[in-house]
Length: 81
Length: 395
Image (cartoon, rainbow over all chains, first blue to last red; front, side):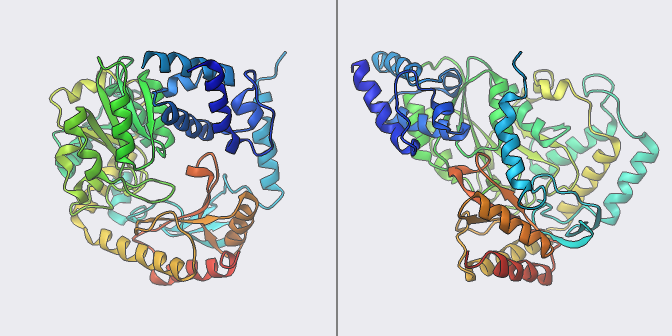
């Protein structure tokens, strides 16, 4: 899976959490710019885990802020699996 | 310089919006307690329908006398932790009484219920282990997980198939696995489908902790909680509970049968580095545990009262947190402003319930959360239903 495919998929999963239509890029800070609370972020990460069939522990989520950060996390785990 | 409070500005703004609609819903002051179910709030006699006082035990004569006697004989506080000078004979007695009540070999008492989860989870799980926690877990479970340094995996609420999937996905398996569930979930009042989760133990080889904070004293033929009700106590390796609900004091416990359980006393920072409970608190807790064991009819009264409120709300057409009757009865509301408005109207009509808002709730729900007591009279329950009919129905 290419980085572009991963970023496209993450943006698709973020769409329901982005009612104001904030433009998404690798630099977008997910909780801050999309105004998603702590529980919302964890719920979104569950969807990412299920979509890519990977495990993203909460400890990793705590250090993942931007879409770019998340792409790196997903990419590393998809490759490992 | 960055002001450390900058990050809290959104909280301050949200608080101001709430205050503009009435009083502080998350800091209400009880000026005088009249009974387990009534208080004076803002000069008005108010029915308490959101205090988790499930057994209605807080004004029990014998319990109060036990507290007064301990205060006279042992003083106001222990001035030390359990591993220093803070272990009195009565702390050990409470642990023994609880172990007997729970049918467990070992029990350790904590100064608060919050610390019980912090201590037990961080004592059991360490950096090489993995904790699997239900998405709707109480904050004390989340914080205990963080303190443990373990790998943390969250599974979908009450969904054993989802946990099965996540356990199967697990990458590094050299450490132990702890699954954490709750007997009754505090916001919606629903129970963990314990049998479905226990069925996964054979396949995935994990140890199971059940937090019975809201179910201890409430569920099961012995009042021990969900595992007791489900007949699965042998499968629940560890149980956690609190004294601030059915026991009517403050504190918490962890219990289990593991041969090394007592070593947790020297591995749990929230147990080791805080002062032990005051003598009066321990004495009232002991008396309350004995009362619960002696008076199982309190559980029956609680069940009847819970059914009365649940059915009353159902007849009003409310959408509730769950479809099974428990002492936690939450009414789902449309949005935050209307929930705050209705909460104020309930208070002004003499009914106190909890307001529960995101992110403290699952699925961004806004809730008017009631908790029922064995001490509520039928008239009090009916009054709560009547006031909800006026304030909430039709909105």
